[in-house]
Length: 319
Image (cartoon, rainbow, N blue to C red):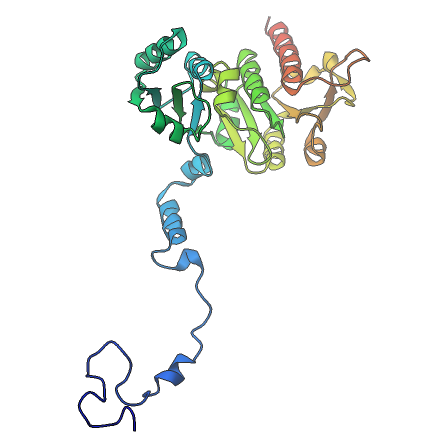
């Protein structure tokens, strides 16, 4: 019988990598026995998902909260790059194409980067093309690290500990980074102690927001809340009055007596305004008197108007 013959070469040598020399030895039966469900990717040793979980376990929870989902940003073009450097946007490297034609913007960019200790790297144009994904870069690219957000509870605690009544600005669904940057700038100008953003459906502090804020994002803490409604409730429980800007608000900004008290000013997103849950969480709905020919204001303009009125009332009260 094939496999059982005693002639030379008819059976496999012992110790080979293949199966049993004679018969199955029950291996076929054991092979059919179920081995249980496949472990999750995060539970398989050596799997990339398991490595990410292990790395997250080694990192503090607050640091994970600040950096999760954030990646470095590359700003390209001579005007955007020099504007970012003028505004004090934190950067790690300035990439300059070898052999590019110099002009005032390039010279100023190199000088500003050198003054701030930013690495200046001369790279072949083909490498710059690859790094920017083929976008027109004009020979300049600036690497901007992810923004480090504060924790909402830390911002609230710092506002309560300030010498002036607490003043926070919360944005509900503002998706334009230019609006975000302008609100941060107004918040810093009128004495706010921090800005609160929802983690989802909201613009973040990108290079565009940095430029619009004129670098004020370094002077005022910006926090990201996992649940903005819950954060506003925490602020209300801590004694802050939550004021939402609404075109249908019952109280005019001219009559905002709560301006001298600890306050959270909530600004809705472009077009849709405040979400239902956030509106229900607000203690007051405040409207800005306007001409009938205009239905609403830009989110950043509305925030600036209310914050200016709050600052005016607080100056009068301090006299």
